[in-house]
Image (cartoon, rainbow, N blue to C red):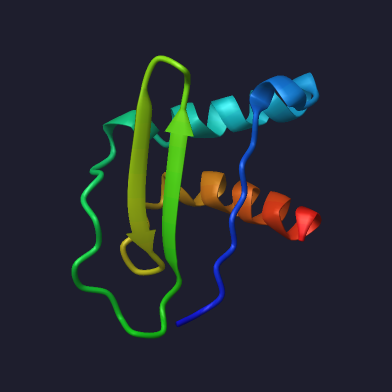
Length: 88
């Protein structure tokens, strides 16, 4: 089993430019319309990602791997990974 990286971000606690960037990335990825099915088949050495967005009114979780990641979701994932690295 690999290393688990976890990050929780509250937009109300971020500067306006950072919260705006995350909101834009969520919108551009069409996050709330992405399939939320857990991964069944993935290559053994791939990273697996679980991303949950909770607006207070709606919560949606997606599961993806390196090979199943939609290109529209990559900018959001890259931003979140960069934030996790800065905290870690």
